[in-house]
Image (cartoon, rainbow over all chains, first blue to last red; front, top):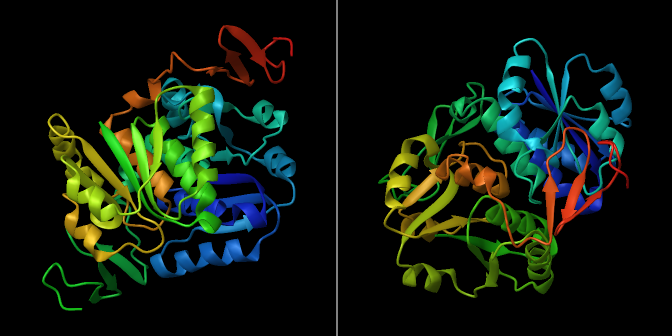
Length: 187
Length: 187
């Protein structure tokens, strides 16, 4: 089981970034996400709407104290940071550890307190370059699951995509809908 | 050579998301990025500052017409979309094609015109779930380069990270600086 902890959400600045982090967590096989910083009902609503529409049991939840969450966490803790050890050098050990332990994956915001580096069992760098917490989380989970998460389907989904070379085909629980008819399907 | 095309940037809403997309492009081995939508000097400045500090020759550039760019593109075109064909089913062909052709990788914004699906040689789904264009781009490039991009170093960088298990160590062209001394280094 994988839980993501997103630190320091600011409702004004981070709404869309945090939504992306949460949707990445869901799409790449994490089970739930906690966030700290500002409580944000709009963020939770956006994520919950995606879950309702596209399926699965992903949960998003606010926590006022990451320290309490970390202190009571009974599994292992990974902190994704460009200052950590290269992904390739730790991924095997993390996969092994996951056979026995749940994983808490921490992704920071703008500024991460030094204490986070201390409580993490693994500080992991998905490249040592600045980029994006959504991207770092996606690549990390893709390496953890070795690409198997890409095949994930949600049998309970209200909507699902029918992969297509040129079109945009969405199935609504049994019914086929297409956005435009480039695959020869009617609108 | 890989060029990224980011469609429909809105200066108000997308500043940070588009910055993330550009930084992902750079960190995962693309050479440059064009964006359409609003011209945004702040976006360009953020990206250029990262390049100045962390090295490399990555370029960001505005273009008023994606159609012209696409029409004059002499290589192959990949469009990342949750409606496309699964990454795993097309990645081998794309890697082969790249031996001969430059790649233009299109990532959309909120709404993508149907025409984009038509001009793309490959519509590629990094999962068929909604998540994040920054994440989709990162995972796509990670699969293209098979993880080799994670080892990339920038010899001309003003700053570079010294990977660390617990600390935050940054080297400034020859000099070693650490943000906090958890690795036994002084501040």
